[in-house]
Amino acid sequence: MFQELSEKFESVLRRLRGQGRLTEANISEALRDVRRVLLEADVNYKIARQFIADVEKRAVGQEVLKSITPGQQVIKIIYDELCKLLGEKEAPLLFSNRLPNAIMLVGLQGSGKTTLAGKLARHLRKKGRNPLLVAADVHRPAAIQQLQVIGKSLDIQTFSEEGRDVPAICRHAIEHARKNMLDTILIDTAGRLHVDDEMMQEVRRVKETVDPTEILFVADGMTGQDAVNTAQAFLQQLDFSGAVLTKMDGDARGGAALSIRAVTQKPIKFLSVGEKLDQLEPFYPDRMASRILGMGDVVSLVEKAQEAVNADQAFRLEKKLRRQEFDLEDFLEQLQQVKKMGPLQDILAMLPGVQNKAFKSMQVDERALIRVEAMIHSMTLAERANPSIINGSRRKRIAAGSGVTVQEINRLLNQFEMMKKMIKMMKHKSGGNRLPFGF
Ligand SMILES: Nc1nc2c(ncn2[C@@H]2O[C@H](COP(=O)(O)OP(=O)(O)OP(=O)(O)O)[C@@H](O)[C@H]2O)c(=O)[nH]1
Ligand SMILES: [Mg+2]
Image (cartoon, rainbow, N blue to C red; front, side, top):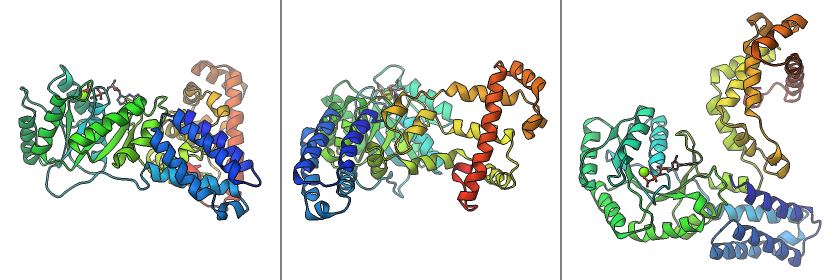
């Protein structure tokens, strides 16, 4: 996400950081570069101009010029202004006491509404709510079935009806939700190629019928400024309550994310980052700003790790580490947890400093993980518990069993020994404190 944008920012910021002394002239020059980076990312030009003016006003003040680390100060100002641009505070979904709450999803064709309906249903269930998916796209053939398939895969109910009277379908969905104690209905509306009257009328009628707690405008993040223009049209006609940017896993240049909030004054609530139903991230302006500036998103990473690491397992592991009983079986468990956190490339991208070119060219080989798993699976439990018994003939057997060479087995065992040593060292350094991610 935002890899290119972030790389460009990094090189501009690196130059700023390197300056021992800043003058008004070289601040202006750096800001011209920042402006160029924003425009190249397809940020709305008015927004870019205002952004630079705001940064400049603060950056050429006496405090910065006189400070010992002027470069850092300017970067901090850019970071602050970027947070402001992105909305400052996170904006969680709103709910009311009048059940069921209705959340409408609106947007152009193919922007990702139906997929998002599934993602939000899953997200809400995790938060303890009982969602109902409502198929309100009666125009595209197979749209209803698409939502039903998603519902089924999540084991979440989908409400649908024959006929084309969308407000009536929504009314019946509300009755159905009440009867079945479902507290949130997610209304998947039909998209059009362009903003047109018919679509707007239909969504306005749905709005009047269900009196939604949220109307989420779903924008394809890949479309840059187009998404922002569409957002404005929807805002005028419908007044939505928040935006969701989809397809942020692709090579979106970031322009939509950076402009939509400033143009519409409505918060971005989520980012959709893949086709799978668990690929949804709440939107945090501050974390996004640090990701864009190449400062990494350590908080999200830790949260992701916490979600994947079962607390019990982590505790057990920690005890083992303390007693230095960490064995290959535990190693395997750790590997599986890393895999649960998602593609390695995504995880790496959240680490500070990992946005740069050197890492970009570093291909993370997911298959290597699978090979290591296969090797450990080919070992007996005794071997996993005590790798020192793995002699030459055992190595040959394990290699044959997992379809790798003996050299690879050697490498794995060496790496494991090194890791054990490192863990020992980390333990000493951290004075027995909790180690990150259960290690
Ligand atoms: N890579 C990626 N693909 C996505 C994402 N969200 C949706 N898609 C894909 O985009 C395509 C369109 O998604 P839908 O959810 O059907 O879009 P829609 O807005 O409901 O489309 P209409 O009902 O035709 O208006 C599908 O192939 C999805 O798998 C995302 O965050 N990342
Ligand atoms: Mg759809």
